Length: 67
Image (tube, rainbow, N blue to C red; front, side):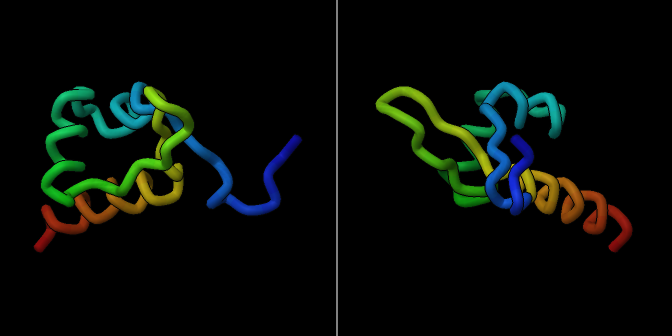
């Protein structure tokens, strides 16, 4: 099944770490500081991230280096 909306695509914390080249710990630190997209709770001990938000966060980092 293909999602009709890219906002419906979720990635795990491990996937977000791979996408950003950050460790899980650093992502959690950035989340606590409000410097990373908010997680979507999936259960008591499971979170995910909206893929387009993580991709936009990466694009912002790339744009910031040119500034």
